[in-house]
Image 1 (tube, rainbow, N blue to C red):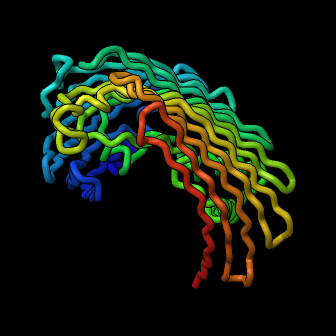
Image 2: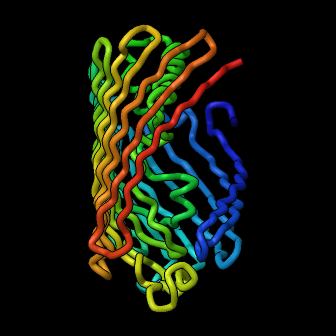
Image 3: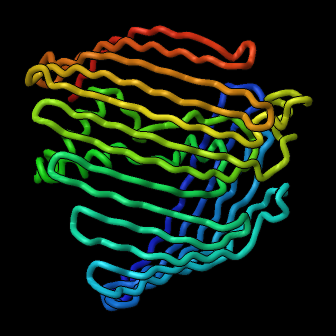
Length: 353
């Protein structure tokens, strides 16, 4: 930190994705992030500078991504600010759309009419076209609502590492902020809820279509959580489009030489519901359902995946929890050989020390 003038950050990240799918490339990534952000001395006009570089290497895949960004935020009032960004972004892949690098800019606003409501939105231009972004959230004493839209260049490996979905813990934190003011106790409640209901880190994960290509992803998601005296209901819906940015021959080992455009452009829509009921101070029941419809636009293949789950969790001792879950999954398809059905019963014990 430079007193109240600015703060700086330097970060190095290494991650690896290993796959057991023939033809889907395993890879390792090294990235650096450098940032300089204005401090409290800039109350009316805030600014920031960022540099990010990522190197990806592995069997059958390699590349570099580089991004320079400058941003401004003009505070019109205590509740409303205007925002703008500009910079340059470069990918090392050969694009089928004509460009894989270029300047970008956005202009937008941040509006916080109350401590319960927040809306941020912008629009702009990048080398792949017009861009839009929306992040809106609202909470009441017993509910929290969110609506998000974003679009970006990404890959299958990126979606494994950093999925573009709503963070489960953060979403539940908003829900229980009023009812559980103590942050430590609230975090303990959130951790227990995620554990007892078998939730992932994201509120709803779409099917990650396997491909070695870069693609432009456009995603819209709406979520709501309702909290009662003894029960909690979480609902979420999404719509997602993926448009290939690189040649499909990177998938020849995955789909065969005659089918490497199979996942060029895809569309998914879906929703999920989870209801959790506190039967007693030590026993919880949960019921969940997921529906996802996927379309491969090049071939007309259409798949529907439905999952139903019911479970029971119980605190056996202060540091020992047990759970049993039944899950039924069924996929139907207009493509021969793509259908399946699964039934599973899972029991678990969790002991903390």
